[in-house]
Image 1 (cartoon, helix red, strand yellow):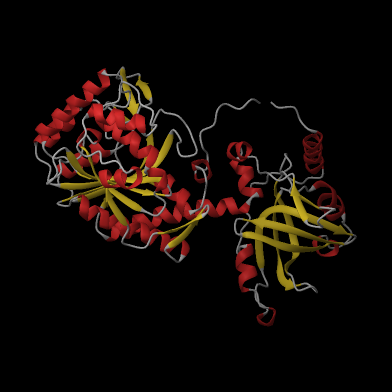
Image 2 (image 1 turned 180 degrees about the vertical axis):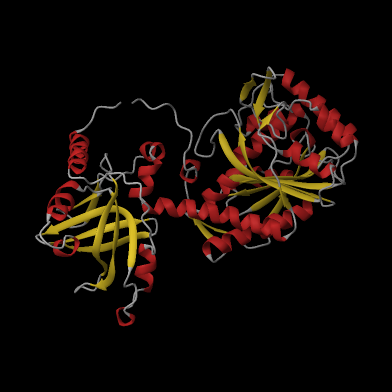
Length: 508
């Protein structure tokens, strides 16, 4: 247990005093709330004399005691409202202990209280609750970090100090962050709204939301290093999924026309402002469609998310105003590289690509094949410049072991990524449904693995068996929910859109 500060010791003493007075600091009875602070603030009208019997509960966030009367502020999940408390009303008759001792001395900021009373407007016009009953619902034993302000003597401005702004503390103690930085809550409400909008959009199209295994005997469906775990009873190694693609395609083989899943995926890789070891993506597979059709769906769905969250298609992200209105700009990968570097790489072999990369100051290592070199050039010189939502299409076959060969362009596949604000937000293909071609691609991946590529795919015999039963032509999509949330809430790091991001161990 950590060393108790003076304030924490004091709060524990108050806890004991309350118990001695017969006040239960953690009562079990239900406290029935009938309104939220925001409902009252939005709808109270003195001339209607409404809200004459209200019950609210929340944290005590400030209190000013003036003799018999006090003003306090209560914060619930919707916002804050002022309370007016008069000693003679909450302690009728002679017993003044409740007010004089409990309210004035033993309640602390951060304590949960329930109040009953009626709403009125103070002389200065502030909507307040005139409290007739007050109950302690839960004592807080640690003080919340209090935001203080003081006047800057030179400029006369109010300066905020001691606020809870250190990102590391905020992510470790999100429960405190949400209490003292209310705008943080908005980000997460928007994230849920984003997921809800996508879900409604896909359900309206008649696609089925499904669940597939997170613990997999073989990891597949993406290029990434997995987390590994062990099942004792079966005495076998299992992996946390890096993607759910291969399972969803099995469902298309099984006869579903459209399936999607919001999936938690896990990749055992570095962490950054854009990477957390567990993240969420939505994968969608639709039979009898191709990647061109899927591009239209992505545009429409993401445009709808922007409209739903912001009421318009433009979203401010950092210094950029990003417009999600359809249609988005489209380039093939080779066109995009030529546009931003001036070099046409379409016909180059591995040696020529290495030379080009060196001229463009792109770092390579010997394990990189042709596709990886192209990917590095693109990542260094093109991706960061794509701020408005842009589709990049037609990737080299070696980069996309699960995508169908291009119908007109040898050596390429039918694949697109949507890039926005300099980062990929989704990846999609016309899915490879030729089992012979798929087996060959898996074998090529095994060779890359032998060359030292730790992200190369493993061969999944059962998936190949499924394809051999026949999979209809299918379009597939993976869209990063965390990345899209960052853009839609103007959050500079992925940690801002995850309630509990992964952190290194805390030195307590």
